[in-house]
Length: 340
Ligand code: SAH
Image (cartoon, rainbow, N blue to C red):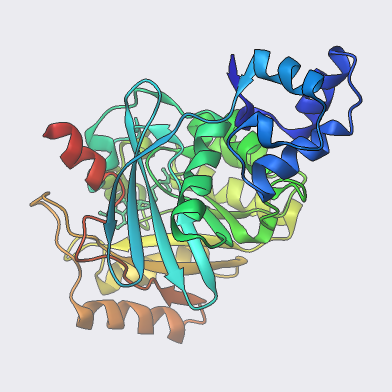
């Protein structure tokens, strides 16, 4: 038995053909799953009884359970339980232009960034496409509204689970699936060069964000162990190559940590690193956690950093803060729940 949400429409068509069933039923099944969002094959009223019994033999519809929800004005935080009892989380951000969901791609994370809560718990396993899709479906059902954009920035490193994440994107992007436009999907990586190279060849217009967080390798290594494997020179070369191939602008995420990477020197070093590239910088306020080694940059320092970038003609925005009242940093809710 397999979770039917793992299947792309092409895979379903192939499966149906193997059962001597016409391929067009895959489209009907997709509509039931993603547009009408039924959770019982018997409700798929345009499928024959015979076809339903065939499908029911091989598939079930989803197995993710909503375990806990925390609410703030503009943000909901969801904790989900998987069929093997592990926990993952997703964060809903309510913008005036629509609902955006931050989804997890792995149970835990092996990248070990020192400021990040997700890495406190090592990776247990990768998430399957269906387990990522169900995060969206359960949240849509909870709020009774559509999710219009998806960011793969929850627990996990998406390029460490490349194939499942790509399949997930293809299913939610499909017009008979959730029909979430590629330009409304963003994948964020800590800088796995082979992943960036592969992603540059994908045929869709999904956004790429790079978690840079430091303008040189020495500082980056203090924050992100992965910096010992992929040097900034190689990462930036992969980004250049990606921009050349896709003609798409890349987001550079830069988390501001007080007295660590928020100095004027860092700002100028960052400018030198990215000047002339088709990128824009997203300055991220640190979501304070129980980790005593890091403090959020002061407003004055954040503004100064921002101004230096602007004056040097770098496109820059500061990320709006969500859910400071609830445990909204990636991995925080899960970490606190597991440690209980
Ligand atoms: N592994 C991927 C995606 C998950 S992390 C990546 O590294 O990009 C998503 C983003 O949240 C990353 O930029 C990460 O560095 C950042 N992040 C992690 N902990 C944070 C915290 N406490 N406050 C603010 N941002 C954080």
